Image (cartoon, rainbow, N blue to C red):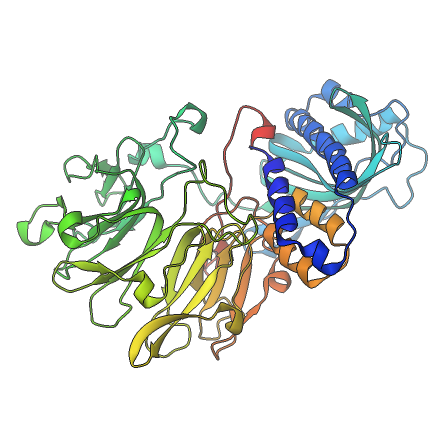
Length: 558
């Protein structure tokens, strides 16, 4: 799967929303399609340049540039390094574009090779089309490329270079292109001063692995998270991860290593394939129990550490009223009715490999989310509709927090396909507690492709701010800038689908303000969960976001 899928998603959404007809815009979609077809062809060929740059393959790199190339030298001289943040520094590069002079192809190539040789090794290099235009004869594409290189510099430190270039390129037939001009307009580097993390999972005993997606039987676009808790009450955190064929439970030995004990604990194989794990003490007996979301029937396992004295999990899904069919993706626990017992909220998606979101922008045909209310006697009752939170917008994640300081827990739900990630206030309605959808009124309606949600006090003002994980796409932004050159309301709405993560500041009065542009932007590609963490121990919350999607055999398949 490549970014063409995302482009199709954007265009389909625009058409279905009928935004152009409403605004009276005259868009020639056939011309737009022709321009994007050429641009996408160039973008795909640039992936081959990316591979050649990563491998420092000079012969392959040279093939991408015309014999008549006349461009300023590629910057290859680093400027003085300056500290910026703890563990990080940055430096610029000497730009030659202000006074290029005559530069032939060979001189340009030598400068580009010198830039690449700034790195001992290159982990990744990418050249992407940020904007483009095509001449009437279709023989020249001009615009702006965005590029980055990540690797080890000459001193062996990790360095990340990012930049922009103006370019001119010509198609050569058979999806091949040559660049006739390339001028770097912006470039800068970030350098890590210390090695902060090492991969130690294998030596510590973590052995779980899933087969590559392309080798798996049909199972939808499902991967499986992990959850941490002290399961045997020994004071050390253990880890559980559901898998495709079996589950994994890693018990912390207390010496920095872990023992895999899923079979012994009764969790190696479960009736359904779990999509995510949630630990909670649902029966309030002093040990932590396990709720497993699933595409199928949901599952609940009682921890028998208390009263049996041994760590073992008993499947109580049926008798607890949890065994409800759904397309469960994730879950969150909270005492929503303040009766002292933890309740469970399940976010539910849909069968994306069989059912397409309708409409593509603002999809409403997901499967309803579920709310399991704990009855305090070992049983739960499903009451999402009764509580007003049976959201059916292809939900990915949810989180609870008391956002208005009234003593009860409110709910935020992240929805995919620009369905609108939603805020639900926990309020009294005619004497009964219910959730009231209030995102638009409170300034927290997020129209990105929501995939994660977290709360944290990023500005240290004593209230909880909101982070919503979304997608960002250079190709998507390129097309939407073409469709909406002006900042129209509809353009702003659709551009949110490709803009990246969102950060909402809690104003302290139940209202939120979108601070994504000022504090970010938070461009993280195909982003998922993540959230707030004080990474550098300076007293301020930082943000972490994992990202990525399917990886195939070529760079076009990522």
